[in-house]
Amino acid sequence: MAGDIDQESGSATSGADQQVGMRLNHVPPEPSGPGPSSPPVYGPFAPGKGPADFASSPADKKAAAGTIETELQPNTKKAAVHADAATTAAHKGFDGWETASALKKVADTWDQQVKNLMARLDAEKGALRGASGLFVGNDTGIRNQFATQSKLNGL
Image (cartoon, rainbow, N blue to C red; front, side):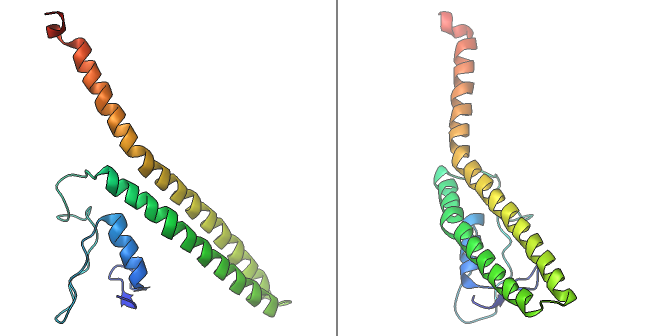
């Protein structure tokens, strides 16, 4: 778990990253214990993986939105602050060199990417929280539509 290598990207992943991924993607936990490592799990939307439909419960949507709010957003913010502090220190160390201006450009690009990611996480969190209400509203609307158009209503 901690220090595992992600099969797709080849980068190291932490146990916390895998736990968040499992909750967001509804991936069953990997078996533990001795023996060969299990093949990588890519989530329910990979071909041949997961349920036959894309349905999820309101509780799953609420849990995913909660994970975004309590783990992904705060941890993203912490990582951004840490990177900004390290880049600022490096920028000061290279003051007067061409490297300093390059580090400034990298820091500005990083800040914009973090801003975009935080906005995307906010949008996803809102969409997850609003999806259940939309489904209920659609179901109620369709039921009402059938009820008002039925020729049996006049009998």
